[in-house]
Image: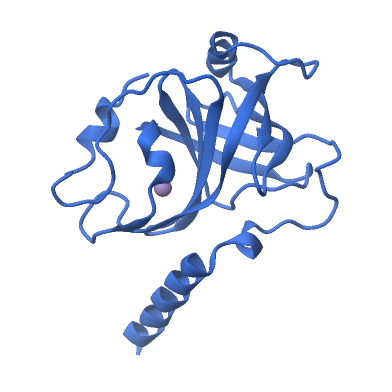
Length: 197
Ligand code: MN
């Protein structure tokens, strides 16, 4: 797991994002979900593993409804320090737009039976394309899976398991977005309308 790709895409003299250095595994594994309004609005779902954040771009955002199988496109590993990044990536830079933390917390890798497994075992499940984990966030709680579509290594699905945190109701992550995120989007959409005239 390397941050070479992350660093090569970015000019750190021109973006406030952190430059990539590998961290150490520090006991509990962290996760973050960032709402990223770049050229397209999406949610970046990141799990700490092996000293970096394994990352997927989820166009529709995560869901607590097990019927929603949310497309998750694997992207380059991000540094652990990215987990607290919020702000504006200036125009002309990779991923230009606004980033806010939508949810964060810790997670535990688990196996088919829901038993906690080691990060090493979890790394194997990443390579096998079938990851299960238990989330302890503000919005995201309980067991989830990330399943590779086997179409290619980048295309995955993010799925909530049925448990006491799951819902049958329609779930829209936008309903839980911070005011600052929504304000940015409203402002940008307003600009789009003006430009069309
Ligand atoms: Mn992104």
